[in-house]
Image (cartoon, rainbow, N blue to C red; front, top):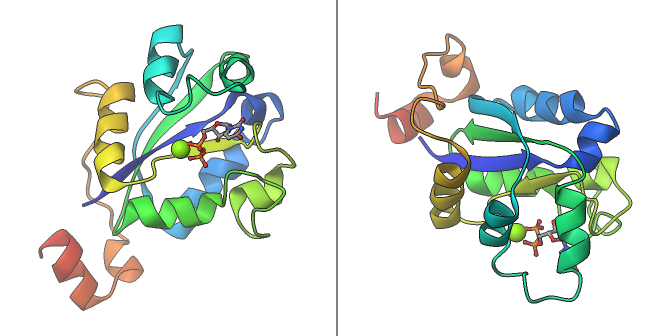
Length: 159
Ligand code: UDP
Ligand code: MG
């Protein structure tokens, strides 16, 4: 089953909307495979945002990501990477559609509430960056057969 990584950013935690964000993913039917709070070091941030370290706004981005702890969450489901990116919305929250997390909870292009992996390959790299062995959980959920159809169950769960 496909997995993806989200980070609930410090601005969301400060604003007290961490639960609302987790609830959205739960309600959608994505399974939480791992969840933890952590402070991001300079090293992990520079690695995570390697595509942006040379950009003029990086110092602001860095400060915003180190303003408090983040919550790292590994979500699991059929086509989880694409589904979660759709739910999160585009980077600039002012342009993000209503109904998306950024569209509903933020006015900012920087303080945009949540990070989500942008491809299946990056999701694997990011999950390994934020979670150690033993911090991710495989468990049966009784409602899976009510969340996915028969053909989907066979395709995505192989049973
Ligand atoms: N960011 C910013 N200004 C920009 C572009 C990005 O402050 O012009 C920040 C923003 O917090 C964004 C993060 O850098 O979420 C990572 O940028 P990316 O382009 O990877 O966007 P995302 O994948 O988060 O939508
Ligand atoms: Mg990105």
